[in-house]
Length: 276
View (cartoon, rainbow, N blue to C red):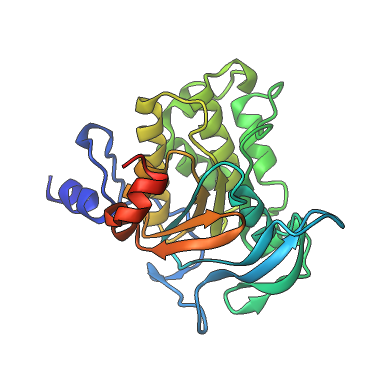
């Protein structure tokens, strides 16, 4: 019980019935004796002063900075059209960064393709079209490990431990699952790459509040293994409750940057972005 309380205190989870800490979960391959390897100066992942947009179009991001340390949850919030998803896609190499840089563990990866960033340890889960609906749950997970040459059975078992419903439905076509279960498949497939950074674009979009709480709880659990989480969320208040760090974007620019707790307590942020 004490572990549950410490877990709730650290991340802000409110409902003890959905807290499910499993100390034995070891999804993060970037560790030595259970101790995270520190990045050589600066945040583990940073999109530093990014300015850019899609193709040759106008800039959507303007001097925008996002960063996350190992084992942290960093949440990007803001009004519709603020550039939240665009900023995260820029970090993943899906649009042109005309100014600024993206660095992973001290290495400049600004020029790398998204595929090359996956090989470096980054995984991205888009908001939509993030599963193969005609494949079974297990086949989706196997597809997530397409770059790996080693035995994937251990990682798959860890994913099933994290999302028990997926074990139960592993032979079922993913397209037959509920929205929340599909999101679990998408996250599980990303974890099959053994990422160092997991990027999630609106992971709770379209799901019920109960399912949202459960997904957030699983995200917390992934972060506790040492994997960095960078997440865009419309459910700003709930997301900031579990965030180590929060970024409020407005028109592609950083409006507020602080801890999740501090942003929740900031009167201006509460009034403008959290409904008072």
